[in-house]
Image (tube, rainbow, N blue to C red):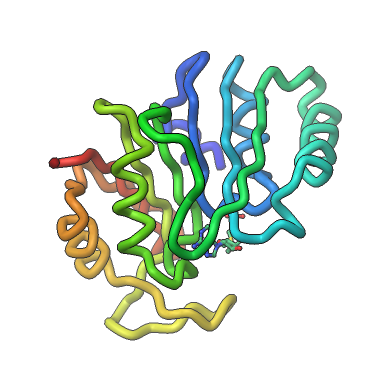
Length: 179
Ligand SMILES: C[S@@+](CC[C@H](N)C(=O)[O-])C[C@H]1O[C@@H](n2cnc3c(N)ncnc32)[C@H](O)[C@@H]1O
């Protein structure tokens, strides 16, 4: 998490969307490290992505870190074809361990073009496949190879400007719109 925090380089008062955030464990921790962040926590799963679950997470990290969390957290339920997030709003959009679970990643990536501010950044943190067709042990879904992911992004008008390598084949892609 610490390495991801330094890559995402959040600034005070930024507005960030996390797509496929579940109950926002990562994002709540990020907001315990940087003041006054606003996170739209988005998922298709209402059982985990809801205000009660988020409030529990905030309480947990406030106790762990020993200070009040100044973040604002807004749960948003999307569908497999729409994020339901507001347009032209976000300084940063995160997709953490989730892209390979999206049924139609290209549709969601086109949607992300509309919700990012003009100078906004997209970050995708994904375990990548060692060979094409590799299945993720945890969820049984197919992982992307690094090249497959870069190609999908290019087809959706995105350009990878930096890649960061974490443990176990996890890569963080820093991305801008090329439209
Ligand atoms: C492996 S979990 C990752 C959760 C969290 N980001 C983390 O790293 O702990 C993947 C999440 O993606 C969500 N998901 C699947 N398809 C989605 C879609 N089209 N849009 C948004 N979220 C989706 C799932 O409901 C699930 O919560």
